[in-house]
Amino acid sequence: MTPRTPGADLPEHPEFLWRTPEPKRAYDVVIVGGGGHALATAHYLARDHGITDVAVLEKGWLAGGNMARNTTIIRSNYLWDESAGIYEHALKLWEGLEEELDYPILFSQRGVLNLAHSLQDVRDGVRRVEANRLNGVDAQWLDPAQVKEVCPIVNTSPDVRYPVMGATYQPRAGIAKHDHVAWGLARSADAAGIDLVQNCEVTGIDVNDGRVTGVRTNLGPIGAGKVALCAAGHSSVLAGMAGFDLPLQSHPLQALVSELLEPVHPTVVMSNAVHVYVSQAHKGELVMGAGIDAYNSYTQRGAFHVIERQMAAALELFPVFARAHVLRTWGGIVDVSPDASPIVGLTPVRDLYLNCGWGTGGFKATPGVGQVYAHTIAHDTPHALAAPFSLDRFTTGALVDEHGAAAVAH
Image (cartoon, rainbow, N blue to C red; front, side, top):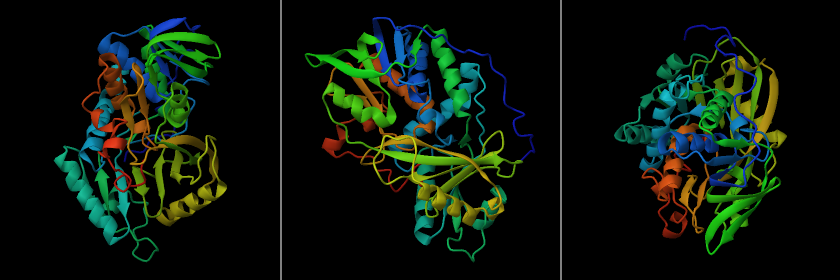
């Protein structure tokens, strides 16, 4: 890895990247939620379909929910064909997104290691590598010595509680700068004439004769030809306003960063058994995440014991971090479906569309699901890549069970 000065590759920006419009009384499309998926959907509605009479309604500040609170990992090495399809589509878009947006998103393809600590982990990992290759996804199986070559600071000693017995490796995977991604997408949507409305909370959804006609907000009613829900952990609340239930549970998910350090960590390392995932941000902080808190909540914070266990797990894998200091912690709200796969497509209400259930994997899908969701909205029929993730799979039984295949599910 070429040494770099932390922060040296972060660009300057203008003070404002988009307008602050008052909402109109009606739009062709209203997108509820102002995170990465919503902004990507707006961008592709304009770019691919010429639909620009669109409002993105965000109850707080733009991209201030999970988009601002995730750990920015991007990969496509999921087990099942359906998952690999949509995530690989997203990864290919990530590879050209900076040029497409004409905006620096700092996409760094530094690779992702998923560590194996038991014989069952090894069997599962080798199986996933072969499944990935069949789906055209770059994947390799590495032995402990090769893991050490890719990431020299990982502890590969056999004399630890969870010895590293190998790892899957996706070289094209990596990280991006999440706020830059949001700003680039927002700037593009705004330039197309789409209204990005902040501090606009949806308090009701109007449905007449089985068809959506608009939304009610703290800024007044807004009519809509179509409404696209894109609100992550609060999707169940919005669906309830429209009169139907979703098979989702919302949980807090925590992460933390260290103080600024010189570049020491050249890739992304994830471990399901030890349950931590670690990368180093562009400025130099170590970014660490763990599993979801067990309880259901809409709070953007979590329990201290999760952070404590997360740090203990990180030190088992990276003893070199023992003297690093935690700079800050935060939490997001993840919406988890019964099969740990997203829900994208139509709803029981005509002209009302749904994008939710991404759990802890939403950021990596951002451009892919934005394009797929925009297509679904524009044509009122599921995009081929979204079709397996329809809401009715929970009644037909055609589940896409990624619980065991997603490593730490990120």
